[in-house]
Image (cartoon, rainbow over all chains, first blue to last red; front, side, top):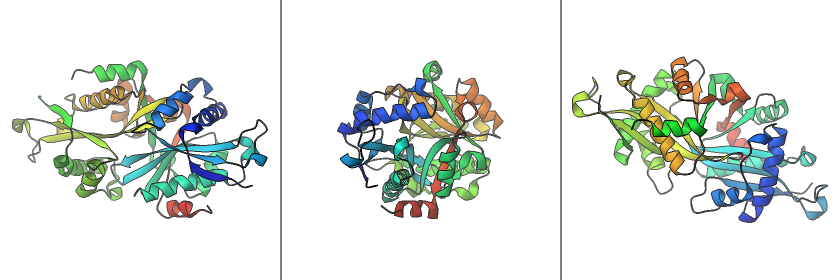
Length: 171
Length: 171
């Protein structure tokens, strides 16, 4: 199937927002999604964007059952490893179920790594849910490795009241 | 003990580089450190920095056995959650062993959360090694939670030849 991968624009935020909800449903965390189309527009397409995005698009005659031609996306941002330097973080990689198995996910991931390498990054980081064996297998097949299983790194988070209290501290 | 927390400058890169090596030794990954003082200068203090830093400094009369007054640091950068929006990532939090237990680590972490909240972030993310119980306990005590243990997210990485091959893909 023909498809193109291109940089996301402001006009894609409606579809990205839709696909974020689809992804969250797939990951069984739909109740955690607070992001709206407007948030994406403001946070990704203002002067100092918090993220960048790429879109996978199919021709009109291959559109989805519901009429969508934007069928996959990845959000990414530049990050840093104090041990290894410049890094790119792939926040999301999503392809609509009916378009999987056609190389679109790999093409999106490939594009993020190209952009990362071009910016001088030596690594691409991301997360995967441990029960999501098909995604994990896909990533391992691309030569990625599981930093949590192999080295014991755990993702930690501070948010809500705990973040507010921490910020108030006693400085 | 008196100490101050302030934004890192170009002149701090020598001490940050020293403390990164100390941290890597503590985490038993010294062989993985590729970062030099010059990398930090270029990557953190050019037009579009890959990270920001803060420094903990003690007065001259409290300097370390080896004569250091810069005794702790944190590197951070802004990131994004496609579910929850703006986030800040605390890449490192380090306090020299002889200055621990004096509130410096908490003050550094508090400062990163302040900066994150000021930038509209709703969460602060970081990683911890699962065998580092004292750090894990410290973070849990601040109200942070373990995303890996609680939700099953694993950190994944692509680097070296695998990253190059992925980028070459078949686009």
